[in-house]
Image 1 (spheres, rainbow, N blue to C red):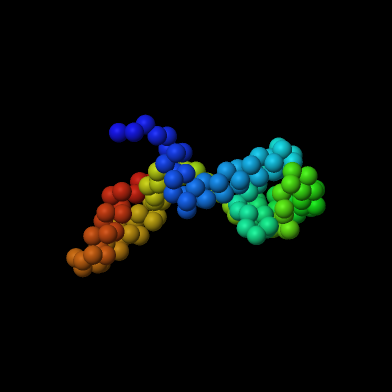
Image 2 (image 1 turned 90 degrees about the vertical axis):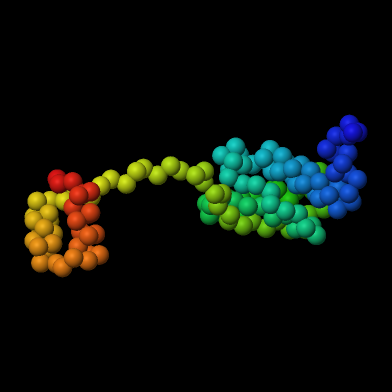
Length: 145
């Protein structure tokens, strides 16, 4: 078995090599963006793509997108000073998926005495069936307040 690095294998396939070069270019553009923006704003914005001279930047919310739009002239000048042939910068709002949050366990319904009495009265009048069984289970699970 040969001891080639992953990069060596990726460079052998021209399509993957092209994709890797594009990804590295986007990372460089992202670093420039991060240094050009105030820290609070740079945390909410990321380079999404560069295609035919159009740089697409995603902002997490409308406020960040609005501030970024105000800075597009400054950003364009910054990229041009680094020999990036940009013709346009487009800003799009693209919220980041939040980390999965743990949901609190649902609390059992708390029945007041009046509600419990009404349901028990209804149970006396209902024939055996799915509705009656569901109400019996509900009263068993639901505590009283």
